[in-house]
Image 1 (cartoon, rainbow, N blue to C red):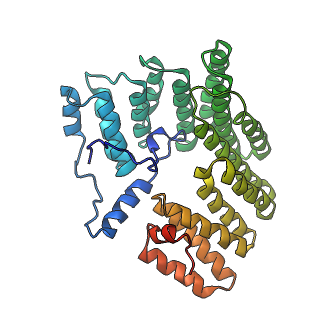
Image 2 (image 1 turned 30 degrees about the vertical axis):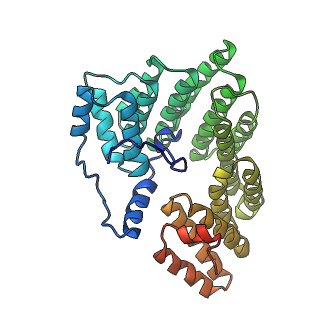
Image 3 (image 1 turned 180 degrees about the vertical axis):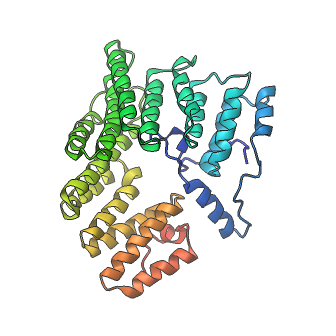
Length: 359
């Protein structure tokens, strides 16, 4: 299970690099369902049992730092065994042979964040002292600390404090030409997005809306050097989606529908990787706004795209909205067919191949 991938599939999301430190169950669900579809018995637990064999290979020097990165990637992003990844991280951080690379230290923090352990923040902060660290990598580690505090610990004050600490660093790095203005803006925008989430959790919706407006502008300005254009486009798309969510919370579903549909149009051009999420949310908003034909249309498009992403849980959610919208629109037979299709093809491969979920 921890054999490093020689050719990593580009379409496989890397959850260890997620700035929001999400512990997604998608890889494990896909891995299990794919085995069933292939006629094999599903592996529901990591056959390694524990991380001791990996730790022994690490201590002996058999596993390099790049090798450890690849093994963590396989355990989390392919198999979805977060618990084993956290054990591997604990073993590495307690070993006499301490991880030296910034990337590995950051990934260990992400693995440990799944257990809500204080050791995760220690690992994230150690990124700053790694021999190969850079300002953008340090900034990402600070964002993950803030995300962990806000999302996992529900400590909005602590999360905002971490973001304020990052803002001081960004100001210095850009001022000293250690970071480009575009890279700095991308990181500021992501930080503001998290700050807006903290405000939403505290019921400060207007403040959240204002922060997201500033973040949306920042995420689209300045010259990039270290941050990839696709990264910035993804950050911008997430900020825009969150703005629609805040609008739904403050103004109601009908008022938010136009924004949700506009977001779908925008990401169709600016970042197609964000389109399935945009379509799924637009379908949900349309359903809540009682626009059932629009909800069904968006949900079907989401189902077709998600069938090619290996995201069975998100696919299931989109199919539920599709079936509910069809039923509410009086298309009971079509709704029943969607439910049957989900049982026959839980990975959505047939919908993705044919380009349609409905007959």
